[in-house]
Structure formats: structure tokens, C-alpha cells
Image (tube, rainbow, N blue to C red):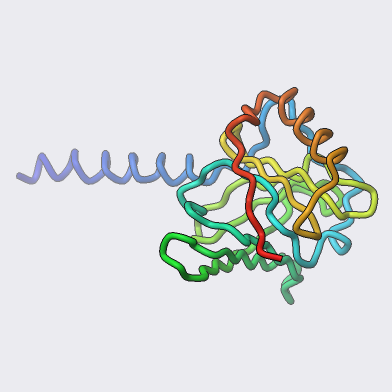
Length: 180
């Protein structure tokens, strides 16, 4: 029994460590580049989710918003809200974002369940910070955001073309409904 424990405990800890390390991927998809000369203060505030892939943590959600505000320690508070139209209830998730390198590069890591961090990369944004294209750490995560519940067709097409060039299957995007 003691010999089995000598093997099982270290192997279990090793597997747990690998799983934890893999879940903390703050990378950026190959071919994607984070926005430089990024102004984090202009990015703060409320954004409407216009489109996303079908993530389990946002399943059956519409009226989804993300509100970003500065924490006293310099990190960014992330307040995600949405309405689960199947369960007929509002859901909210509070997280924290930190810059991966420098505040002028729009590469962040975000956590809703510490110590697990995920990549959050603004890969396109208009000059007035009204519309943003956000990539996760892989081609499984993509969001189109807007300061209003609508997005101009020209911006939508610009973001879709950019995402396709990187390798995203934009046909699988869910277009989020917002009650106005």
C-alpha cells in the first residue's frame, strides 16, 4: 500500500499541475496581434456583446454586457452580466484582468476563478473606442463588442474579415440579442 501511495500521490500532483498550467493559457492565436498604443482608460466602461462563439459559461445568454473599471491596485475589474433566457434569470460574474506585459499593448489575462487565467486580447478597435474585436488564447474564443447594442455593417465586416484571416470560423458566431 505504501509503495502505491509513493507512486499515486506524485503522479496525481503532476497531472493536477499540468492541468492547472494548461488552464492558465494567456496566449494569443497565431496570426493575431494585440492592439498597440492601447489606451486602457478609454477602454473602461460598458460594452455590449454583439457576437461570440457558443461557450458553456454563456450558454443561453442574451443582453450580455461587460463593464470594465479600475481597481485600486491597478488591475481591471470585469463585471459580466447577461440574461439566461431558458432559466429566465440574470447572471453576473465578477473577475479581474491584468496586463500581460505593458499597458500600451492590449494583451490581458482575465480570471473569474483564481488561480485560473485566460487570454483576453483586443486585436482590433476603432479610433474612438466604440467597437472592439477580442480574441482569447485560441481560435475557440472570439467576441465582437460595441458601446451600443448595435454595430455598423462596415465595422462588422471589418472584424469578420480580420477574424477569418486569422483562422476563426465566423459562421459559428452567435449574434447576441439585446432588448432595447
